[in-house]
Length: 614
Ligand code: ADP
Ligand code: ZN
Figure (cartoon, rainbow, N blue to C red):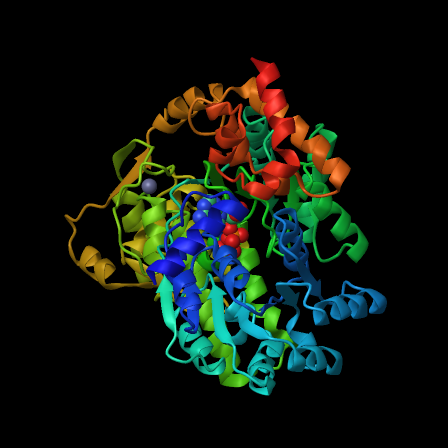
């Protein structure tokens, strides 16, 4: 193990320019190098690629990497080529001609790493190549796709095992995913036939990410304000519908921001162009549906704003996790509105109508999704640490205070909400636990809405007993009462509000009081933020002037070489250059992310700029 580890570290420095491994990487790499099947479960951005690329460089034969995403392959291969590693991809984005040419090269042993789409594996041409090649490892990325319990099940993943079995010699198998549930884990091991694999699960906490939830009246205004306070940063704004993407993107363009869009309604051509514009920093702001992002490794994404609440915590954490992949500070902000819950509910109930699932199986999936939506909604209403809430959801227990989320940075005051609580619980009870929460809230506010009258809720003894509260405030209180088990919603297409355990006690005890935390008007966070925005967004004392110049230089080189700027050097590397001001080769190689090959390509130019800057 020791010898593998030292060799691996040398290559890590030489090719990638990194000084050390991150959590889990060393264990995964050495396990592979010692010839064992290996299974890594790490959150997005944790650094899975290195775990199979490094061993691939060290093993004697070829590594086949199976990945579901064309954009990911292209990106990874480009990154490898930049580092001086011969790699290629084989997928449907190549013409017939290109494909066969690449295969020819592969046969001559030119490539150390070959990315391939799962559908290709069992084609005659690929099999013919694979049968005569020395394949040391088959590595499977996004391996949760093999499981029907995973979020993006892909039947073609089930064929991987047939491919492996067809090979003359069984290679090492390594598999990676960010989905950590028990069912997915078991499926992966079983369906891929992993033999006594080393399984490494790393922590899901991404400490460099700041989390915040807002309930703004005007979401677009909120975004505009944010961008004004954070000029020259790159980020993603996720919306839940194509229509919202179009609207938000149009408004941003109108207001002079470099924004582009991505959703399934655009042509392939336009999607690809917009994605490139974003990746190459031509348009630093991407407005997109959740169709965007899987496999995009843009390391300098400084913010991910959710214009709408996603349908579950898995999606949220994955999408938000695209921020700050370089390990530098980044912000994840969710803009909540009640309508988001309704929209998601609709998606859940209608999304699967066209699929093969039916009957009980369909019911099961829907009810599981509804439960997930509930947990997501609670995230938007909790006053406790957001990070803690999220990590608990993924089964990890840490501190209840992180100091880097909007709740930890907000001062709360305790408010007595007994009156509203009595009205809500009382009205539900008196109405026989038959109606949804919205109409109950309308009733306690004394509304004459059609539904209220139709259900005779105007005759309910609690009608109009909480008129002084606004609807959003009553919603907050109702959500709090769900979180604390006073009431609950049934698991149906139109959920009905019912009394839960604490609610029964509450009804029986006239003296009982309900307290709730609300943020104080002046939030600590805004003061802290104001201070921060004066400095560069990046950590430490980075000279903003030099940083900008280095960025421009990187942009020029990127344009000339036609590769994304972050593949030249990441923001983190540029920031590190600002701190270290390297003037010799040795000093330059000390910089985070500067390896031999990159030094040879770009080192001089950057050093020259640094020297002339002083
Ligand atoms: P994942 O596939 O787990 O989402 P990636 O493999 O794309 O993550 O890695 C995320 C980022 O972290 C990349 O920019 C990568 O170069 C960087 N990275 C990975 N390992 C290290 C390391 N040991 N030191 C510094 N940066 C690293
Ligand atoms: Zn926190």
